[in-house]
Image (cartoon, rainbow, N blue to C red):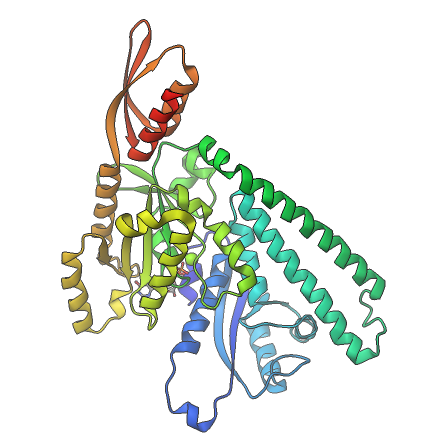
Length: 437
Ligand SMILES: Nc1nc2c(ncn2[C@@H]2O[C@H](COP(=O)(O)OP(=O)(O)O)[C@@H](O)[C@H]2O)c(=O)[nH]1
Ligand SMILES: [Mg+2]
């Protein structure tokens, strides 16, 4: 788990991740469950995704949920020790934590506490790139905030007979906060409606860099960031202006053919995503629609790897990428180093027949060369070289060609520019449609 944070250049705080589970009865204890460990690993990956430095991750067994602190008294005290010893600045609790519990724990531990929804919203907020994505995330964040205002109020109302509380805001302040939030949510709903209506326009006018984009998708903890770090070279960023201006989840990738691409590490899928966050999550994936190649990174060692695969494909279908899922999705079958020999051999044999799936270990590097070769091949067949004749009077179309393709050669006569260009099939189609109008 600690490794997950290592690749990030900038840490915003030492972090302790805990996943609380209700203590099992002696009967239940007999079945060894991997699930809580998987959940803890996922939570640690989520924390690493917002540049928290995960210094410790623990499963905490609880007998029952305590209203005041969620966890039992003993656990709170033991964790206070750990927090002090490890100089932890942020505790991520992979559960729903009420505002009161949060406040009490922050006081006990003298550090920031953030719950599962809060963490997910942080990630979406940091990653939403499109206008629509940002609106969706703000919408979800405000709804979360509003529900907490209400919940904390009703909770304390019960406790304190309807009077204000703990030096916090009184009833009228809460009402005011609620109203401001509600107004803002209404405004966002209106904006989202407008964005949706004009979306096709935006898509048509989008600017596209000539460098192809390869997007990594997949569940959180599948190994996307590990692969991203292995394949790209962080040191290139400082010297190369184009790439220096991209955000840290996009980096230059050198393919074996010498071709350059941009590798994009997207927000991971999250198990049991709270339903009110689904729209915001999908919005963060909007960028994937524009990628030249989509690579599904799968944790092939995960007990639910097949269900995860179906989930990811389902969401890609909903994003209008059904065609890609059918024909063009590349799979990186990750973590083969964890498989027992037999299973691993079976997978390698199977992969020889399947052109689109490459078994790899992002950790050891095994299979990564094959994966890159496949990407190279895919991008090559996708972008082809053509000569376009563009009237010299049509400066806008000429500019469009330069923006969307890689111009190899240009030869002008009196009336036309003959431009030899490498361009994707999709963009060629767009260009022809453009000239017809
Ligand atoms: N054994 C093994 N562990 C891996 C491999 N790839 C990633 N991991 C581990 O899986 C965890 C999640 O990796 P990360 O790259 O953060 O996943 P992401 O959430 O998809 O970005 C980390 O602890 C990695 O060290 C792999 O190929 N083999
Ligand atoms: Mg990641």
